[in-house]
Length: 299
Image 1: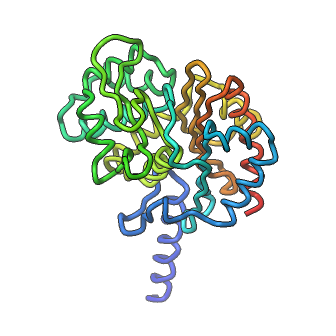
Image 2 (image 1 turned 180 degrees about the vertical axis):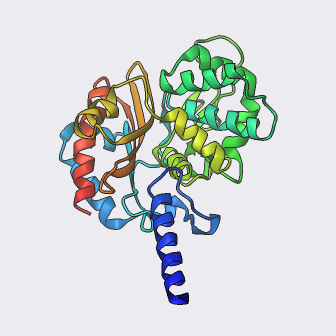
Image 3 (image 1 turned 90 degrees about the vertical axis):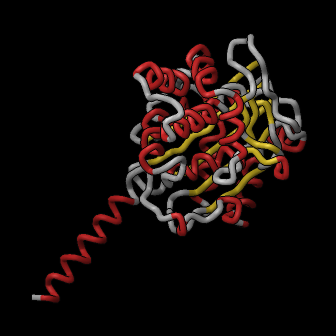
């Protein structure tokens, strides 16, 4: 009888764990979260470099530091792998850094520094899903530059660190007007590096942005984008059943996209980030998905 009860308990534990590891955010203890930058995988790195360099334009842009790519392999959550090209090269990222405003707002809400009203919930969704500039500016004004910077620089996250090329930064309202708080390294108003954006999604997927509850809320806001271009344009065609969490940006020749892909099949689970300064950047981002998935299949 005891053996039977032990067996049932073990089966229940296995099923519960399997379900938990199939849902987002993942249920992981702080001690089990390795630093993403410690998970650089030499084989994944070599394969990514080789695949990107097959395209002459991409190779040229990478060499000119006008293109950066970050990839996190999440197919086995117990063996996460990371690769990046120009990982710490900070670039103007247009609307992509609105994810920094989202995190700062969630942190403020959780600390009761900001009241979570229906208008604020609506604006956070508009800011991410439709990349609405007016909604973002309202959120920036509510939260403030000082709060955004303090969260990005905090010891908990270190999403902006001068020792590693900078990172995520929002220091200007979207739509003009008002004071600014540009980052100190390159004087950029809306900035990102692929390494820091990959870290953002990695921590988000593991429920470590603010806490499990707020991470889930952020994932809900970032899912089902209203904009079906760049990465999502291709993913709609080749992975229509996958869950997609994303934030993109474009301004003049600057194009960026970031996505957490969570397929029903564990073979399609990854984080991909691209920052590009080129007039064909939007098309390049669309074209990146298939080569990147080829890289994953090879590893």
